[in-house]
Image (cartoon, rainbow, N blue to C red):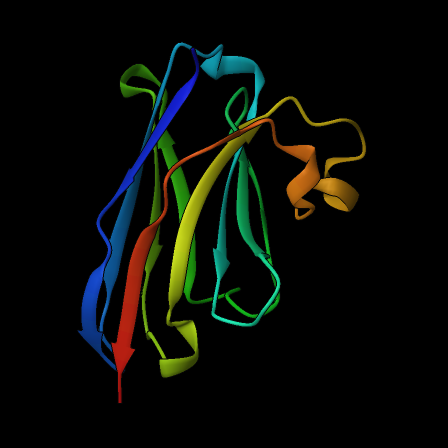
Length: 128
């Protein structure tokens, strides 16, 4: 079975940084899209960033562009989300997801239903 294990969440003060990790097992890492989403209470799941593991192409949501960076270490089947300049509104449960996206990636990467596999989520809490 494909499994995703997200880690790295925690509590941080506003303006601080965190790095989330997502280890993906039993999946063809080189031909997929791996993305980070988040969901705050009462809100829809929001796509934050996606990386195409075959060539490292990336896409970002407007709310995190310039603050968050997605990267991957394909030999470790791991995708990271470096989060800087965190704000209280970044408080949410963060999820990683994997899937074989269809073209054009720029139009579909942020849709949760494009992903077949999800990690368990990791809580990020930013205090003001």
